[in-house]
Image 1 (cartoon, one colour):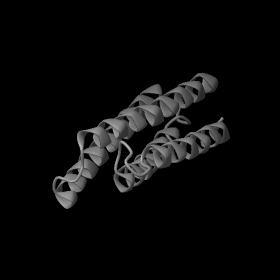
Image 2: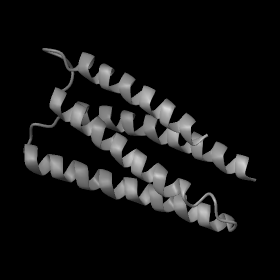
Image 3: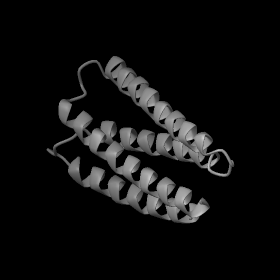
Length: 126
């Protein structure tokens, strides 16, 4: 099941990067650098959160899994807040609302994939 996550995650990441490239063509809706780097940042955060949470599935105590999911969610939350804060500080007004909303959409896709896979892993364990 872990390999299924990486396959789905890789295909989705590739699709999103191609979509990012197409949407940020000349005169496009988004700034290419912001959404490409943002998507890669979100993919990295999602992989880190997944690997952190999947380690807690093997324990006998079911509370350990819940704590792992909460810790993964907090890691993603604070990393996203730090990332957007850093981007706003470094780019000083070059980032647009559309870029942020698109990256929120990308975050939602990664979060859904992670949640569905972790839910399936937890059900298989029981």
